[in-house]
Image (cartoon, rainbow, N blue to C red; front, side, top):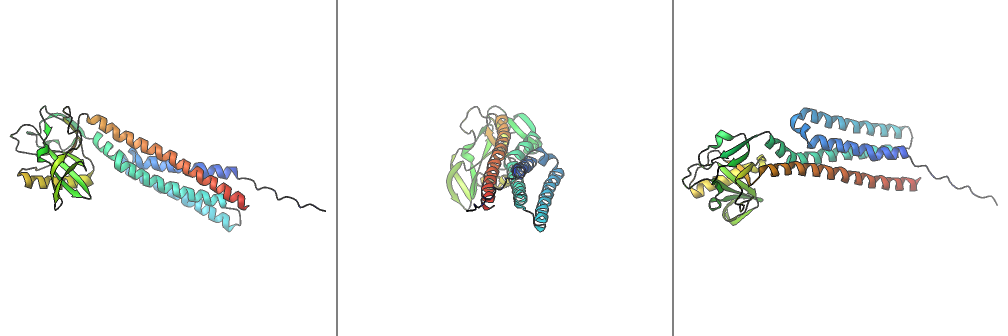
Length: 288
């Protein structure tokens, strides 16, 4: 009785598999780095040109896969490669932009500003130090928590004046923090009973790292407006600082967080791609 020949097992396309694993990952890493770090800050036009060039590469791969399908060839791995590259491009750009906004942009903004030692908040107007990034206030300076105020808008924006002495007439320098104070609220204003922002309880703290995010500063300014009305004080040009002992350590933390976020994304996306490639290999090998 004649025996039926077994169907030969389909060969794995090792070249296509390796390309589908590493090219999208390298594309993701490149976009993540371009959007996260100094190129985005110093050369925005070059940064966006590279993003556009990456998108063009994805479109070329998609067109190549389409041409293979039109020619009747097996384009499974070409389609996977194009889709994975589109995914890597999109995630790299989006996650890189988030990393830049939350970590690296505040770092670059601050290191490009000046450092002022021994600044007396009672005598120095903020207009004289508008380029300040890090400030060490003169001995005796403190955060006056008894004149704290907050503005609530989904989050609580807390401020308290930085003072030196009791005869202060101008209040241009403010310690600021997010969701670190409590009290009774009325029409978005919060009369505080518990201010706990930054290193408020550290007697060695006498420095400030400037708040760089403009979206937060707008709400801090509204809190200062409320404080002006509540305490009958004047703050012509309020500047906001994270109150702490050593701003340089906090500044380094911005850079460290941005680097950690980048490395985590690089490893996580490679793991995701590896999983997708394994699934694709199983599905395509089974169906062949």
